[in-house]
Amino acid sequence: MHGRAGKATVPIYPHLAGQNAPYLESALKAYRAGERGGGMSMMMTPQAQALSDQDIADIAAYYASLKP
Picture 1 (cartoon, rainbow, N blue to C red):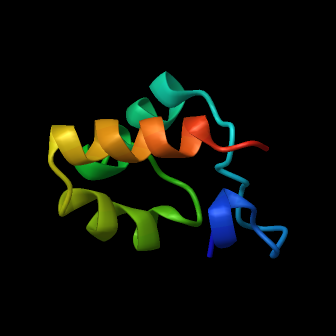
Picture 2 (picture 1 turned 90 degrees about the vertical axis):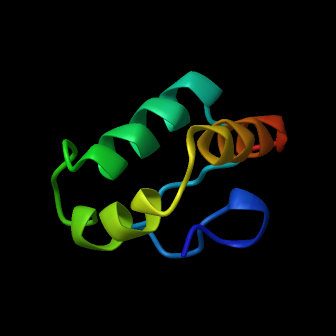
């Protein structure tokens, strides 16, 4: 969905490579809590609910470390 190395190839999915880690953490935590709506929330909420705080921090750090 978000593409190889965080570079989406489908316009409706955002690139994650190089994204700000605190932003990604905030977004994933909001999806996990059911506080973030929108078209993708139906897909993202169940995925995020399976993640621990450490998982979210690790994912955010990984994508932030990639070149955009």
